[in-house]
Length: 380
Image 1 (cartoon, rainbow, N blue to C red):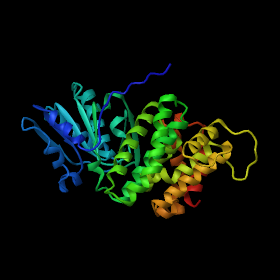
Image 2 (image 1 turned 60 degrees about the horizontal axis):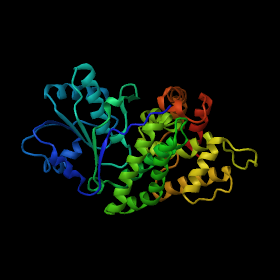
Image 3 (image 1 turned 135 degrees about the vertical axis):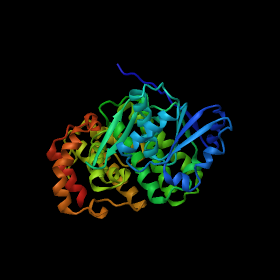
Image 4 (image 1 turned 30 degrees about the vertical axis):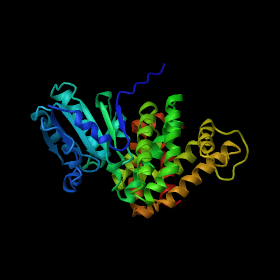
């Protein structure tokens, strides 16, 4: 028996930020990053908050938020007697706020504080998931947290907030969306509901990510990618993810490569591994996972006369999308040296196999399998 709950209210489209006008007489703890403050973008929040509210700004968030910053935030949240949490920023700000909310409840016996998430990138889907990722910078390890206690009560998806995102970040975060959706679609926990969400997200990415990359002022493309990110987040919140994220969590931390970029480099190779795809192989019976990937190809209108052709079409379409976005396709292009890869191979494989996301991968990997994927990623 599966249970599906969608606990986050969504406010979508242009002017969605006006929802903030309805919060009054609250002590509001705002979690964000220094750029949001220095650029003045945070004023988009302040301009909509009623004078009856009191605010505390916690703006120490950095990418892959470290445990020390989260701990400092928990202490500040408790001292302020917070009545509402607002997280505005990319996935790191929202993930950090989620972790603060979770630990405040557990360690400070805080009540369940209302939480509003406002993403300023279209990538993580963190605004609708029970997941958060924090890091230990000294150990170069990322820790995924999973708890429904972290789910925001509300998410505000306003495309005006992503209009100024640089094109390379648009590419990285957009490919993260695609990875979320594809992994959710082939997850061992996938169901009809997650399939519908994932399939729509995949179609939106292929249709609108190149447009958002080429022209940040294209508000239609921005809105569609914001929606795609949310849909993919809802899909993997139901079905979880897979080996792609299992490796990315570890390898991204060790090689200091942006999460979405690492996912994008991995994606073609993980698809081929999961489908048990071998170039030039014959017409023997396809794996069930290959059939699933072929279904994605068919939904995109790609050639898929049989499952194996569908896998090949999907891999080629992803590689073509990477080229359109001027993204690196190998670890070598990201500046990773062969010696560094060899030194970290074993620890990456060990961490990937232990990662919670890998548990729902459609094909059970071994340490040698991960090592082979890393080899292909280095110079495919």
